[in-house]
Length: 105
Image (cartoon, rainbow, N blue to C red; front, side):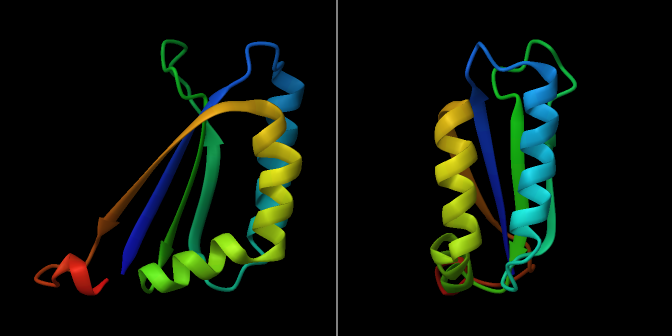
């Protein structure tokens, strides 16, 4: 099982209403993607955090993560939300099964 975390730096002009809308859109679009399990999204509660928005989900494998990123719902979200309201993205992958070699994830 692979855990995916994406952190996003927001455009400076983004207001609270737009951030709320971003969270709502992420949940409505990305919950439809079958490959993603335990999907979460939200905002930073630490005002000093440079990354104000995150996405995370579990995937059975890296291949399933790849399928997620090719899904029309994700592509739509990326084009309409991520490109519009963020300036930078950092992604992290973690293997969550003890004893499993990450290269086979």
